[in-house]
Image (cartoon, rainbow, N blue to C red; front, side, top):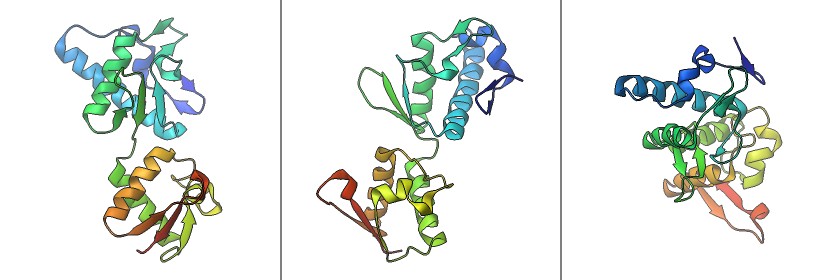
Length: 179
């Protein structure tokens, strides 16, 4: 089984036809499903939140079989993930895709669990501390994409679970939990 860093690749990754969009509908649907799962699994394991279609991305080529995905295939597979609400295009040209291996609501739930697990109810933290503070080390929140974190925090704010407040810079943005 081939590996990419510490990620174990599925068998289809070594099958050349899977790097070409398949013309038969049933085959293409299976292909799209396999690629969606692969992309989400890889991004979660590597804590990757952004895929730029026009830049090198480890999954989009396999030098062992001399195959690479076409631009159309990359966009097709990512658009399928977008269609499930597990990613979002960040631009109209479909060049940058924000990967949500957890949906925003799921990230919000992870944040609430993090707060409870660390006894942070009624505490104040900076947004940066949530991403890289001592408490977040080794958790799914460590290194979370700031855009995703802010959207999850805003969702929790709308539910009355916390209050966001601005500082003098982005590094000073704070969160007051009221769980």
